[in-house]
Image (cartoon, rainbow, N blue to C red; front, side, top):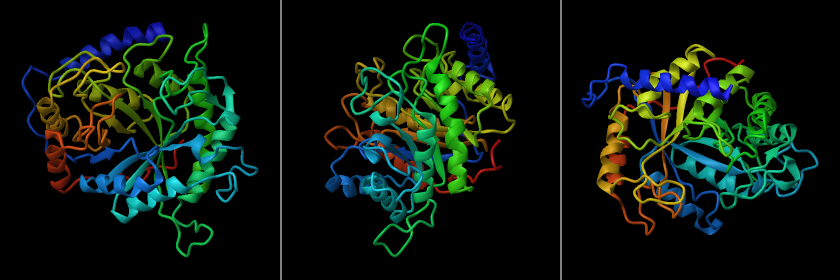
Length: 389
């Protein structure tokens, strides 16, 4: 499959880059705008007494949608006796509760990504943690499904925690894992002629989708969550190979998500995949699975300093200009592109793509982001069009 799809990637990318592109910058689109969203990647790890400040920083951007990571191994450090019950004493919901309540208090819709395997739930030993605090081991699919049922129950909009008088706010959008096509988030990716990460993810999605729907039928369950990789190798699976594998397995889903971090400017045609040039072609690939399937771009951005994780960088001024270009692209201003999440709010040493520098000072891109969130008329995240597959 990998060799055949690799050949298809080349043809696909050329078609995307040449589809109506003449080298000129696109005119701003008047189509339906995607939700302008932000992610603060410090929310899962900042000290709890600093969480309120971080939530205020998210709110200050004007974003009405924010993506948040829930680390499974932190919520469930020991195995619950009844994993589908959010009241099981093994669970620690302190941080997720504060995040979701803080978003609600500021009128922000959450999009929650759940990953990071507890040691007790490992199905396949994942090896060394390549990213600090993240255990990439493939989990037991049944255990993951039970956890997702507990999460969706707790944030169904009707769950009242012990000692509280009001229910917790609802979460209506869940992503299954984060960049599972990267060995740093789901491992091992390959094992000779097999693809353990892909096979494991298929089983995870099959377990989690019905579990989430049992807890709250109105949720949008988003699968794929593809990291920005064009080709497949020992440490990762190309984004198109990943999509093809999931489509072949026909896993249940309401929407698909992809991360986009190209080296080229947004308005420059490129054969690289995934890129801004490839969105229309990517939607055509989704149509082969389910016609009209929505695409969520749940991470996007440009780093302003080279790091060990990304050698390519742009100037701060280019980053600001590219942010504006992204939201003017006609291919993102269409009904099927639900949201674009800028990652991240603030630089860190591994990923300096923030609107803020590591010292907290504002880059030029911060004001550009405020321009986008202040324009009004942004489409909020849609409810599921169907009950899935």
